[in-house]
Length: 576
Image 1 (cartoon, helix red, strand yellow):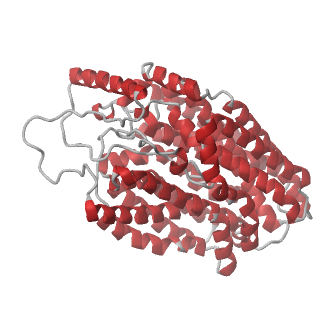
Image 2 (cartoon, rainbow, N blue to C red):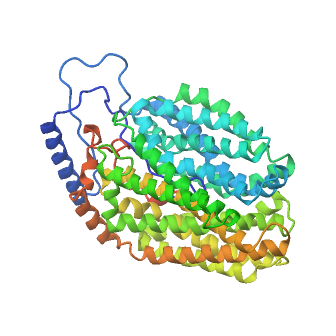
Image 3 (spheres, rainbow, N blue to C red):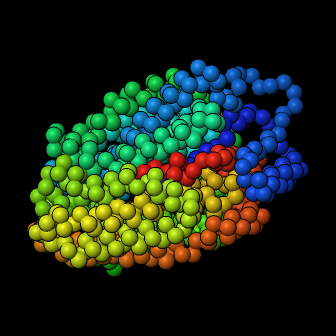
């Protein structure tokens, strides 16, 4: 689930002069007025790029080496770009591959570590939950302390946690190390794209971003296959050991070959991180424990109460904070709210269903992990074949119609599987449903980035893409938790028939949630209407986030406009 497709477009402006003094209130007012006028001018001239002014400090420059401002030129530019693609691509591949590799190995982990359903759920959700929550703060850490520094720290943390996961003697240890892996992944994912975009010249940026997205898409598409091959050929521990040599090479290489850069030194919203983490953990913990301990038990009700109270506190805090982790006022924009709800509901149904279907092929039908990984390819690998075509379709017809169609097809594929699945269902009978689901998934993910970016002014694109990535991850967490509750209320791992008894209602609920997502997608305005709403939102509260350098609270730095002529298909990964 980690970064399924539609990869985040964190494109902070590179080379911000973070050493300059903070402007006065009057200077900030003039600066904000100037920036808003530039945004409106950009909308009238979409081929122009957006540049946000910064105040110039009087007096001599600060001591120490200045931050990088422009990519190098000539032979040095080519070398820098190649190294940036290799390093950020490998880091992205490692982080993206991890989650679906683990999902294929879950049946073996369940037997070897004597884990129950809740243990398997937390093995996946511990990673995804920490990734989703910390994603909103990792980019801010890079802006303040150095993007390369935090990126390298993320790789090191991910590597150490991978080794600890491989050495885990029990499921509790594995869950804890997976949570640490998620923290490392949250540092790797947004900053890898930021560092890459700053290392290449503008005329080569589109190609570099396309390669970056293709690497992430390939990792996720072939994750089940790689996980199955490793688990079958060696042991489940090696799905984590594989990360260790990659990380050991990337840490010194990234420090040596990538250039350091900083952004606006905005405050970190630690209170927001604590509240949203507590809230989400409380809700998910209650869902996981509900069937085993009783939905009206004190522990489960208390967990829900703490979670809901903390989430309400998070919203209250974010509305009043001068430096919010997430500006919830953006959700007053119908386009922004609808596209994020749609993405969350899609991930809810899709990843919750994949969690159980990948185990069905091994636990019930007796396939090896490698055979199961191969048999999932008609679903997960479909996007590799169709993404370029869907990208052209999105340019011609717009993203909304493709997203709605994709959600309907995804739900159709899931309902199809519900209708035909039993302990002895031939695999060939499942292939058409997998293909339909794969086509739907591709139609959804490829144009998603354009809908997200089109829902806000250009200066807020980084905030919008980061928020959407977090919502997709949270949808997957809630999907596994809720469908796990549905599964355990009707079935178990006791026999093949008992597993199917729980599987079919769980997948039916997932398919129903995806249909609700299709209805939510209908609320996304059309292309022209979306831009009009985004322009109106710029002056109705979201405009404050245009001024991150003056302490407005944006944690993303200064997002730049998507380069002229860049297709959304070039910036989007090609697999879930």
